[in-house]
Length: 110
Image (cartoon, rainbow, N blue to C red):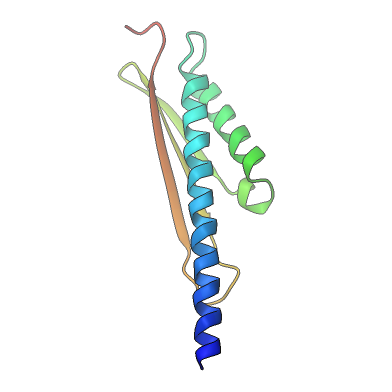
């Protein structure tokens, strides 16, 4: 019984580390997206494209292809939201929904 609980705890900790890494990737993608979208000639489309590129380059594979990215102009700022659901490969382990938001002032708006 102790061995089973130990295995369960180790698997849970590995999943937690994986979710933390994915959260960092989502945060980086969101920040890079708003940087790209805040340029004078750019906008939400450039933001979404760059955020998707960054996410997929840092996390390729099936998880990287399931990312949800949205960017919008909000009162002189570009705001991005990057979301991904991390499904557990192990039955009985939790699923993590991870969202990261970034914003930057649009160049030339002030």
